[in-house]
Image (cartoon, rainbow, N blue to C red):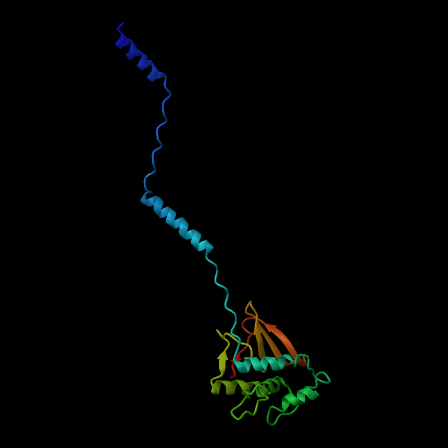
Length: 208
């Protein structure tokens, strides 16, 4: 065997014994259209999930006159008939003075007439006040101050009107219930809570 042949055989044997180099990993190509769409969708959902929820809107604070009425009547809660069932007391007699021609009798409208007069927004075309709920509502309709209960958004200081009873909205609670202060309720000035419909209220009267 010649020297050249021997060297060639030795080189061949070395090449067979040498460890093979691993193939370079195949580089990923650009994402397909489907993969891109899927990624966009996932990103969009993540952004939606991270977006903060809008805070519920707080009820309107009421007119300045309404706020004045609420401030007045909050101090009156607990005033009661003396004796019970009499429709009278020294303080209830003062409520009646806000209504022309008043006399001892059911006094829920006297109470709201007093509160409205003290706040500078007396009821009636001449500011005479009213002793009857029907008269308050009729005047409110004539003067454009009435708000029918259906779909209404009551505000603090609004008068809330039922059939033969009237009170004042003190506040609207976060769940939509209406908290009121009412004269001649259980023979006293009493704080009440009604459902969002006002427990069948006819409507509201907004003053100021």
